[in-house]
Length: 228
Ligand SMILES: Nc1ncnc2c1ncn2[C@@H]1O[C@H](COP(=O)(O)OP(=O)(O)O)[C@@H](O)[C@H]1O
Ligand SMILES: [Mg+2]
Image (cartoon, rainbow, N blue to C red):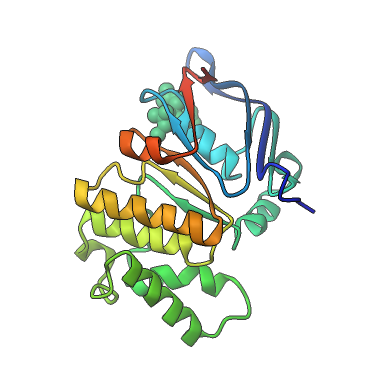
């Protein structure tokens, strides 16, 4: 069992290498990182430095070439893809750079989806919880819109509502304010830190946004696949 004094994420000697036309490319090289529960971490660095790759490995969406990642007390490298998905479900929220909403589902149905994947919640409760989250992100009047009828910023907020609907212990977000105007960006940042304070959600955020990085407890800088 994970204790409150244990890191919620612990990374040791993590590397990611891929084969390419010229041989082998090292994307991440010997990363060490500890993240405590309830803290907020900004991952910053130039484009192509390996930030998105690192986030995917921390969340168990991708597998490492070497090293270890402990997430919520579980060693990800020993789990199967199904076991990693089971661990994520309900414990981890993810906001991708490309929002990855389901095009044939309304905003409300998209936000309900993670609740429906968990057992034990009635459709009515799931719907009212999803509606509440959409109201929090200022989309109470867009619940029946399909993603293609929403602006980029609105789609981003639906993705955030979907990520938070299960009260995850950890939110991973890849440039969550990258495609938003200043006002919407502020609202999204405020919402993430509200969840951080209210639910103790750990925030792990890849960002170029100076304001967002400044509000995080710690900043991790990546340069060419290494922490500097
Ligand atoms: N599956 C892959 N195959 C080959 N190269 C990859 C792959 N994934 C990422 N890369 C390369 O690794 C580097 C880091 O990518 P990424 O993690 O997306 O960087 P960042 O998010 O910091 O911009 C980039 O040069 C990218 O082209
Ligand atoms: Mg990236």
